[in-house]
Length: 319
Image (cartoon, rainbow, N blue to C red; front, side, top):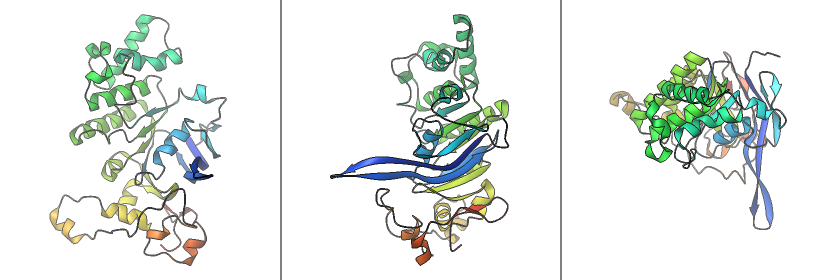
C-alpha cells in the first residue's frame, strides 16, 4: 500500500501522568498535532525547550506509546505488533552523543547491534565488512572499530550514532537535535553529512533543533511548536521570510543577523511573561498569555491549523 507521504501523523497526543501532592495531573507534552513527511523530504521541527519536540520524535518511533492519535508509515499504521518490523525502516539519532552510546561496547559492536537484531548478515566476515563500510560512510577510520566510545570526541561519537542508525538502511530517520551538543565548526560538518547521506540514500528526516538557521539550511519545510501544539508549518524559506504566527515572529526576531546595519534596524520582539506550565495550561491557545494580539476568542478555544495558501499552515485567530 503506497501513499504520497512516507510518514503521516494524525491527531497525535502524548500525555504523561505526574504526581502533584495527592493528585495525579496530566502533563500534555504533545496535544493533538498532525503533519506528514514525503519520501526523501526533511521536515524541520523547532520550538523552545520543553515544547514537546523530542516527545514527538520518540512517539513516532513508539519509544513512547501514544495516548491518542495514529502514526502511519508507508500507509500502514504503526502499532505494538508491527513496530519490531518497522524499526528497520525508522531509526533515530539521539541528541546526546555522550549518553546514547554504550560505554562497555566497542564501536564495531555499537554499529553492529542493529545488524545483529535484524539478522542482516550471513557470517562474521560480512558483518565486519558492513560495519567498516558504514564507518567509512560517516567519515570514521577502520582502525577506530576496536575502540570504545569514551575515546572519541563529541563529533566522532555523533558519527558513530549516525552509522548505527544507517546500519539497517532505513527510509526515515528522526534526528533529535543531533548537532546541539557539538562545536559550531563540527555542527556544519555533521549537517553537511546528513545532506550528503540523504542525496545518496533518499531518506526522509524529521530534523529536531533549536537553531533556526541550521533548520532552514537542511529543511524543505519547517514546523513550529509551542507547548505541545503546532503553531505554524510552511516551506522553509517561506516561513523564514514571511512568518505569520506571532510566536514564529518572535522566534525569528531572536536569530542573530551577521550584518550590523541590518541587525540595528531590525526590531527584536521580546515576549512578555513566562512560559506556562504544561501541567496548568491556559485555556484556548497556549500562547495567548504572552501574545500581544490575544483576544477573548483566543481564551475560548484553540485555533485550528489552517492553510493560508501555498501550503502555509497557521493556527491563529488574529493573524
